[in-house]
Length: 273
Ligand code: 5RP
Image (tube, rainbow, N blue to C red; front, side):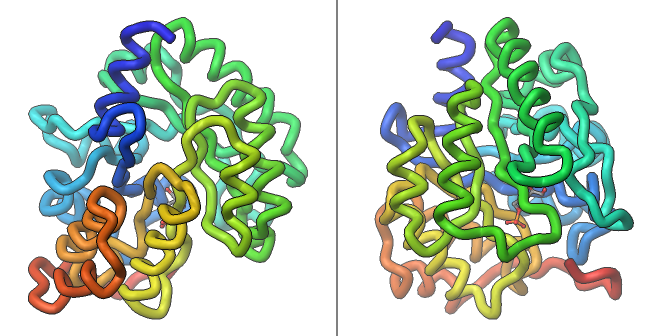
């Protein structure tokens, strides 16, 4: 692996080769529109940026909502082309050129792969081509094992297959979901795995438990969105997650940061997702 790619990975995993990462996902608008509490991405992001090891977003939100002086590494979503208004979310293509990713000085690019979905083939070919371009540019590629609207697909057998296929096609890291039997997903995937949070859980504690279990079973970090910025205390939530991911905190220990929370994202009466 060339120095440029190693450097980009190291910036996202600040603890070194065995270190973990806390990525903040704010890329939901690319297919869900102005998601609840992410309507004003700039306002949502501003207090959270200093506490994230990386942010995951599209070029539109990066250019409009993140100050160029930011030093937080960027994971640029480069796939899209479908919205929640259609049933088949797997009909995606690559929407952002690698040279634009390089121009934006990103630390990685990310795309969804839809294993078992109608457009499985296209999404896997997208991944393979993106890896070729990423190798050339020195930019790591993160595959996201997307399930579209079929959240029930998130079981160990399916996710292990999707993660392994992504790694086999050259993904440098994979974002997936936590599930029962997650250790099987980790065991079969030779590149670092980070976990998404999925739709907002019933409590902040549940999201901390998810992160704790994922790290205990071998995830190298989280790439979480709604369970952070849809929390009533997003900054405290992100800081609590950091203690779990980076400092081996227990859930009870991390919850202490939510006892005296700071920062509340304004609520807007929009579509809940
Ligand atoms: C959207 C994504 C999200 O980045 C991913 O699902 C993480 O966000 P959340 O924790 O809200 O699920 O890939 O397509």
